[in-house]
Length: 129
Image (cartoon, rainbow, N blue to C red):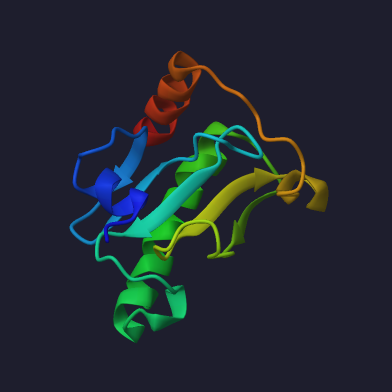
């Protein structure tokens, strides 16, 4: 059964895309912990990130690094935090979040509620960076 991320990759569900390659897609999390919170997914549907072929996982991290540079250009921060939780959607993915302290990556906090227009604006800024 296709995950929600597979449906996003296939264009069946819209997203706020920030970057794309033949193998990967980066788009805004619609329930972010911080403005600029991006998800990086492989287009190939694999549930667990460490089940990805080694070469694909390596390329995914390099793709995420490129996206992190775009995020940092738009959201000045100390770091772009990287986390892999892997429980919420059965499709390998990496969270990239602009952070200035550990609290900025607290997934137990209430998520931000951003309008579609605000998400679109953020996505356009990151994509253009």
